[in-house]
Figure 1 (cartoon, rainbow, N blue to C red):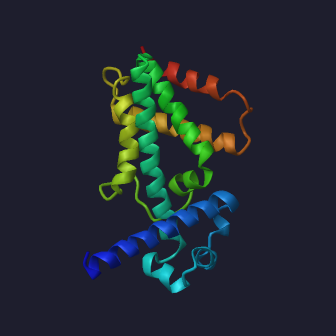
Figure 2: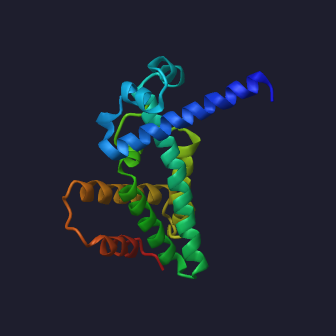
Length: 196
């Protein structure tokens, strides 16, 4: 291994450590607790080292969001595939997709916030949208295209489905919806998609 390759590998490892530490700190104490000083202390590097990887907290949030989007996409695909293997039909696959999305948001609230609530400097719904974000949307679309009826644009249906799930996450986390009805909400959403 050349010196240049070793330096690149070490840089990538430091970057992963910064992102993982930011994510852990945010999940434990919230995003307000994530500062470059705290991160530097936790990973035992100086603040200038952090700034050599990220220009500030906004870019760190963006890196956590991209990592989270990749994880969410993988979980959505696994849920849909699992329902397909169990021969649950299209309705079962869409319900599994919804459950996987809601479960991800519940298990990873700080990551979810980085993805959809905080400014991570990421662009959505545009040509310059990062691939990880596009893939997260594609993971929803892959299943929902099977339920878009004639004359219904699958991408538009996916946007409405995603918005509904995001609304459920946001209202549930804020204590605005009664606890215990999550499964009924999923089935209501799925059944109203006119899934056969």
